[in-house]
Image (cartoon, rainbow, N blue to C red; front, side, top):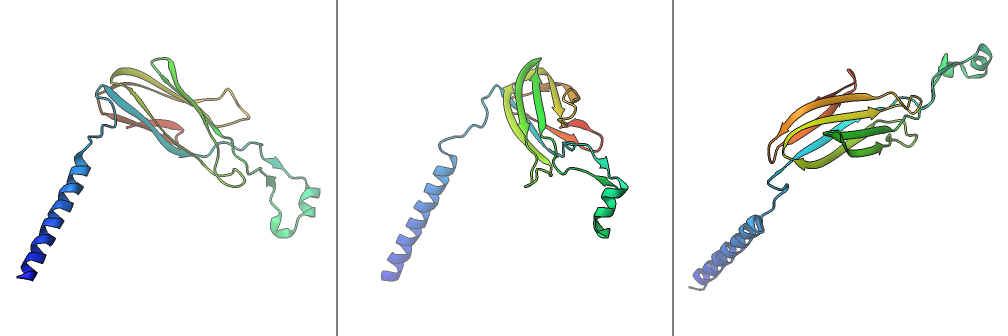
Length: 167
């Protein structure tokens, strides 16, 4: 009889615990975006241009180097940070800078950002500068889009073609 009571209390305890876990998983309700909003996400990795241009080494400079280190050109390792601008309907939505990774700042810059925007038709322009030596050169992408409430537009970058992608 004692075993039956113990199993009964154990079953009631597990049932109450499961009900509590279920209640906390659905209450309070969580809404990520307002009902009238969509979202723009930017996510990509890209290596900026080298900060300094490569230069040719003279014969004297090459001869001073050990044989296994003799390379005709010398390039700096440091890369330019990415300067990113996002415009929505001609108005500046964001302007950010992304530093290159690595101890010597010689790696790629990782870009990740998200922006809630009103649902509806918009003209989206994204511009990026990946060279401190050429501050006026810009890589740009433009898209006419229609965001529905709750929809997310993801912007990527193809480093080979140097174009922005919209998904």
